[in-house]
Amino acid sequence: MKIEILGSGCKRCIQLGENAEAALAAAGKSAEVVKVTNPVEIARRGVISTPGLVIDGKLVSTGRVLAADEIGRLLP
Image (cartoon, rainbow, N blue to C red; front, side, top):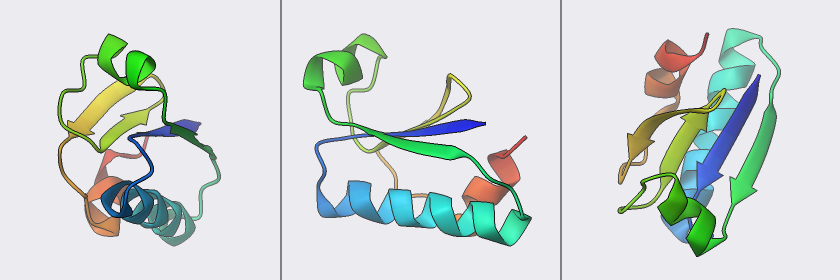
């Protein structure tokens, strides 16, 4: 599994990454968590408002910092 955090590296993006790690730990799953900060790449994926959350290539959230339990429900 691969989780991508799309954003500039701002406080909200960092928090989303931490929440994703917590969701993985709570679910007992492992995944590669990657931070994508290139604005061209972020725009190419259709994200207008950051942070964005991508799970296994599927954009599942933009513009919100999802809580760990919300992310956990999105994990395959």
